[in-house]
Image (cartoon, rainbow, N blue to C red; front, top):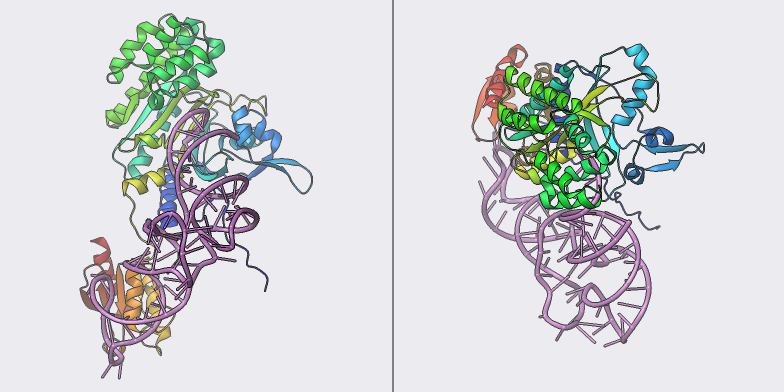
Length: 445
RNA sequence: GUGGCUGUAGUUCAGUUGGUUAGAACGUCGGAUUGUGAUUCCGAAGGUCGUGGGUUCGAAUCCCAUCAGCCACCCCA
């Protein structure tokens, strides 16, 4: 007897049991529905890309996290680490036949070989949506609306979309003569919420080489408070004279006005000059979404506007704007908040195999219910009824249909509500219409 | 990639200064005279103590390595 191979999974990679997969799929379905309601179309791309595609615009950091290897043909390849780079390549290759503006969503796994932590894995799913080929602020506004609709559809009430505009930051940097160091300044600023003002100020001085007065001005900008209009008013004098900065201000106020006009509660979108986003390809609007009850987990949906998505792949000028929902991070947040239902069965109705000689009649009833859109699980073995009901209870079924000799004789079926324990009987004639009505009644409650 | 903490049945844990066949709860499976679950009662299965070395007469218990999990940094979803 050879030794058994130890079953195990790689660090940062996970199996999903039904109890985890059911809410996961529900979340994906919800995102898909919201994206489609705005006219975003689905696309997919290969998990594996030529290495040069992935490293084309990457920083040292993404290079380090990239899963790379030589394939069987000796080609240098890598697993995609986000969905934006594949989109850029995709757009460069196909934009001629797609036309602009092009709106797509892309829900797929990505891989990063970084250290793991709660809510951070090496294989995780992103749910991206982007509009490319237009510079209109309408697309930026729509991005915020999608994020709002998305979280509302998920059933989260307490969330805040923090919005900013890179031009505001760049405008200030222009005025301060710090344009050269913009990347390190933004990276430092990005830590404001998490690390606090002191840390940021220090990093600005050391890493970005800002003078005391420059640090002071940046921090002044980053610590503004008040409602959106107040912040905008405070920003104006700080940026006056900078064309870039003023344009950023205008864009921010257009977004703020538009979503108010649509009827989104004003506290949902907050102008927050501390939001910078470490990624340096953003050029305009940037946003991060936080759960009010769980800010520590970080942004669960982030995005922004970029000027030229595919510049390393094509001469075509492709501006775009879009965001990405961090599905796994959101899921672990929902789990922590106890928002998720605990079911491990996707079908609500359980049909015990009671009378061993009546298999076909059970199957027929199940088929009738499914035709009415009701999911039914038929137990495969005619075990004792008590056992079967125990099984149904543990799996979280809502309804059990009990049919034995007595019911068959009467042309009826017992409809049992598993949460209350009560039951009623209904006729199985007329394609089980009465049974279906009873079930719907229970499921509605 | 750097630093810290942890690793005993499916799960949550207990296991006394290293000393005989490693325990509990929950879960799983079976049963309590043959048509009704989640609350009762009885019983069973399940662990080479993450893995591999080392110290020792003897290691779950000490040391090293490795793998995995958690936390911080970094970065990000």
